[in-house]
Image 1 (cartoon, rainbow, N blue to C red):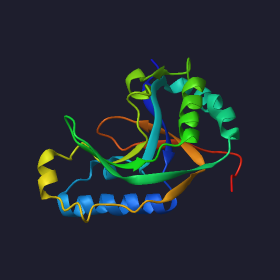
Image 2 (cartoon, rainbow, N blue to C red):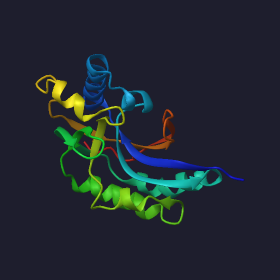
Image 3 (cartoon, one colour):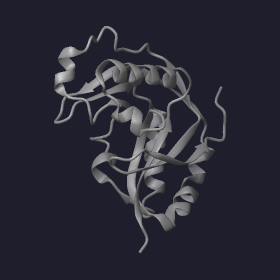
Length: 188
């Protein structure tokens, strides 16, 4: 029987955005013992789409995304930190609205129809937000009262989106980047 795997198509953070996310996750780990995201992800990222696919169809997934990569690189900008107050709180880097980012997300979503079983809740535009999670699974409401948010912040930076990552994930396990695909045209 062929194994099914959870896949995320994501934009890995690079340059100053990556540096700041690593510094923040290190601070959360050192000062508050919050390390789930830092320990389970290879690097902070913006998840665009998620789905389930059988392992024997992974090459089809890569092939389906090839024409997406003919697009130009583009720049996105951070917009401070955000906090979702839900059953489990989520501390994340917020990203400013960017039409090219949404176009890329929709193009990827369309290309993967029929290739995988889409997570329709997460991929729905009404539920999706451009964010990079920093603290989630081991982050609780009791942490909020002990945090000095004057020390937990980022400066706003621009980041050039040059590539997308294909990530395999399972709850309780380290994420594995299966493939990194570069956008072909450099937009200067």
